[in-house]
Image 1 (cartoon, rainbow, N blue to C red):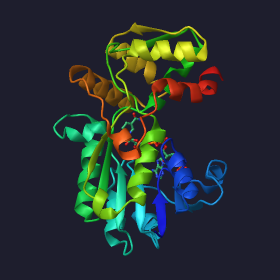
Image 2 (cartoon, rainbow, N blue to C red):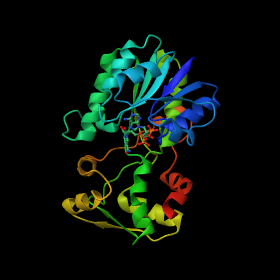
Image 3 (cartoon, helix red, strand yellow):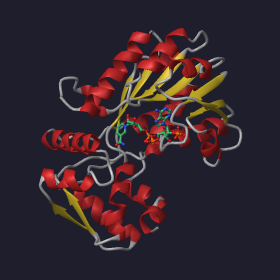
Image 4 (cartoon, rainbow, N blue to C red):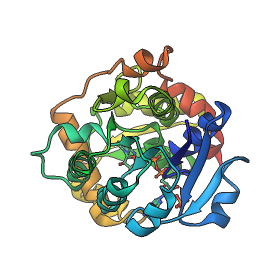
Length: 284
Ligand SMILES: NC(=O)c1ccc[n+]([C@@H]2O[C@H](COP(=O)([O-])OP(=O)(O)OC[C@H]3O[C@@H](n4cnc5c(N)ncnc54)[C@H](OP(=O)(O)O)[C@@H]3O)[C@@H](O)[C@H]2O)c1
């Protein structure tokens, strides 16, 4: 194996993937928009390369001498990456971080469209691609940090929404297996990914409260009130898209996928494990 380009290298999935690949002896080029800031996050041995996911020229330079790549999607839904990838002479395999939302092209929501379009772009690029389709990440629980540190009440629109939250480290583990494996084995495969157990909002709050040692309970609020409150710290279109995704999965409950265990040979990490490992983020 030559060199793997990891995009989103300082992010929740990317930073674990970088470390795993390096530990396995793979050369890693790590894409970031800010090399100085990334310096404090990227492990020794990763080669930082500066570029934006919307900049096809920068991506073309980043892909020189690279034979495999892990790509996440940003606002342009993979258009620039697909363009650069289709011209990258040595690139043989891409692992795309898509989402379970890509399974429903007809649903009108920006987060769904981004992943449907991202998969389409990569297929059209002609580069052999593996599609990772996780559901919601455990990291979404970080939105509850102010409630944990504040009045101990999380306000949600859909308390019964039941999702098997996935630990980003499990996504990185699956990506690493695919990137290091034979292209013929992994190219074209669509891998639905989830955590090990369905948890509704009350379950999530109970696990956080027990693990962090602070009281936390869930209170249902109307959608408009939630969007107004969330817009204080999130862009409003993002808040609206998020609540749309929650409505979708409340109406069509997702299942539990066994893919993490099948690919990595060990069970997916529990939400309790993720919270335990991020206890300090809740306590401050
Ligand atoms: N959260 C969920 O529940 C969920 C569910 C399904 C799928 N997903 C997918 O997961 C992806 C996020 O993955 P993640 O959680 O690992 O990422 P993350 O923690 O949000 O980090 C993303 C990293 O990507 C880099 N980045 C952001 N915008 C960029 C741009 N325009 N150009 C280049 N780099 C950029 C940033 O690094 P620098 O600042 O160093 O550039 C950042 O550290 C989303 O795109 C979404 O498609 C998320």
